[in-house]
Length: 142
Image: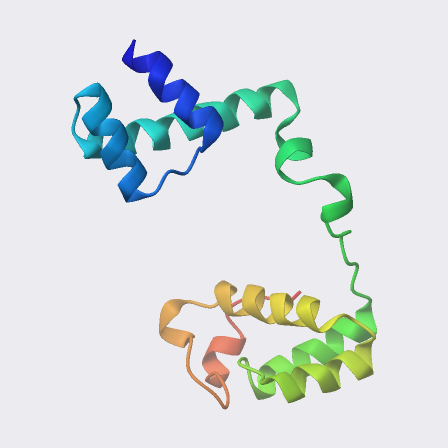
């Protein structure tokens, strides 16, 4: 049946490219767009089933691949907040300097800045060098 053919293709390749989808569409006699939607829906269904059985995270993101949660101390936070108030869009040199000052990984510093920028209303997100003072008081940094 069509379903069996689609499922066997899915086992082989859950993300077929356009050429593969067109070939499959020709083989079973349905439009390529239907094939694309079927694969998308089937991937979602598989993820839900894996998540419910508790195997989702171990299959798609092994424990050793996950990073441990980073806890930021009060002094580290203060340094990051001061830097954010000067410039919410730090360049790599500034982030590396903050790495030396705080002892945090540069990637974690970058993520902290991204999170802080996301807390601001859209009209307050501005390009360097600084966000307006009125925006600094709208959300707590942390």
